[in-house]
Length: 113
Image 1 (cartoon, rainbow, N blue to C red):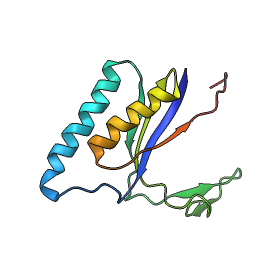
Image 2 (tube, rainbow, N blue to C red):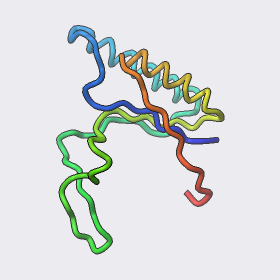
Image 3 (spheres, rainbow, N blue to C red):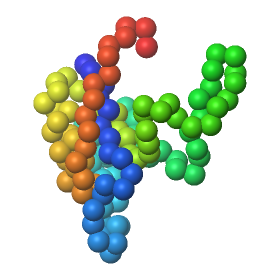
Image 4 (cartoon, rainbow, N blue to C red):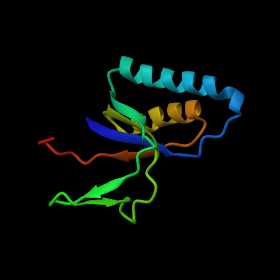
C-alpha cells in the first residue's frame, strides 16, 4: 500500500468564526474514521510559533526554509491506502470537514523505510 500526504496551507479554511467548534469536531471525526478504518498513519498541524531552520551535515543551523519550498505551514494527514482513488475519497472527506480543498501527494516506495 502507498502512503499519501493530504494537506492544506494555513489561511485557506473559510468559515464563520462561530463555526470553529463544528469544524474542529467534523475534522476530528474524519481522522477518527481513518483510525477506525486502519488507514491512519500520522496527522497534525505545523506549529507556527516555531520558525523553520535548515541543518547541514556539519551541524550548521541556518534560519529559514529552502527558498523553493515557501511556506509549508498548515494541516497534514498521512494515510496508507491501496489506491489513489481512495486517497482522493479521504481528501474529499477532509475537504468537507476543513472547509477547504486538500492537496494529495504519494510518498515514493522505499523498502528500507
